[in-house]
Image (tube, rainbow, N blue to C red; front, side):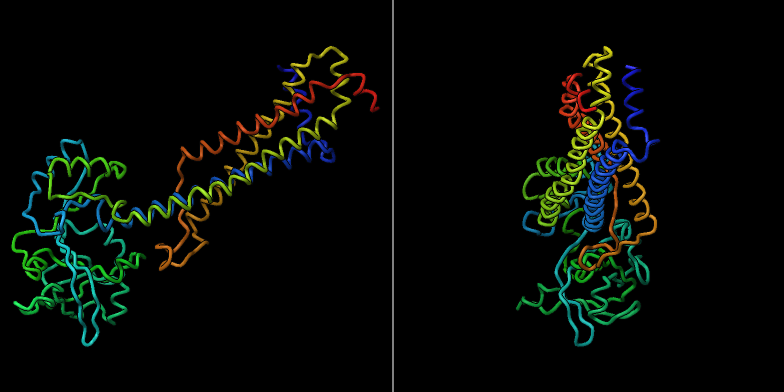
Length: 401
């Protein structure tokens, strides 16, 4: 084993920079490294997109929403809901909310909006990080609006707006229910669906505007482990029974997440082809090394070295190229990703992609799988050249000289 290892490293050594062996080895490492780098970066960027969008949406809607099946007002049942979550060993927070459609007016300008009533404890924590002007602190007769809505209405912090219950506009029996409110804060999430239509107000004001009395629309639930949302939602719905309905943030935005999943695999397959090219390069490189070293192989066999040792020499070469190429590609990917994380040189249109820069998130399980697959593939790539090297006949090999 020591002899095979010494000979393999001597062939792969870069002391003889002009030799084809050195060039072929470097070319194979570079090809595999670029493939691994492309795959790691691609998977990290895709994970970053999904995680960023998930966090933003979950920040607004919560991981789970529990409401009436027909969206009717319900009597509060927080104690019962908390007991269900506690029984499932979930780390959670629940908050009552009211959600209704309304019209917001400023002079002659009017926009259709979705009012969400919360108390300060139930207001999405991500709102504080998204504030562009003013404060997210909800006080009586105050509202927090999105940046796109503020631009459309040409309003700023401190301006007064008139909110009109949309249901009262189509009802003949009663007059329009309206309320004047002051803009206390303006947020910007990058999600146009929210920035132009979602307005937050104190839950007591929402109950008064929409004539809910003491009733609410439902509860938002935030849990520490978002992956458990689906199981918990099913358990909540089953325990509470009809007409209560529990929906996760991914189910509510199913089209968006289906699009993310749909585009993930074709992209990974396309960039995986680059890594496959690197594996093919290993086969080509080792085959050319066998041809270059055919005299040396014949000499070793004629001196009594068995074919098993010959195979071991080229297997070590392939493993060396695979390990060094995979680690080099991983290192390059980490460096490039680190530059993007810290300095953010790659920016994108926030109104289209929901974020202002290309996000990067490492999934170490996937990265480990990529590196492992590249290493295993490089070993399989050595099998045919190794077989060819061990099948060389000494007389034929020495005849070339």
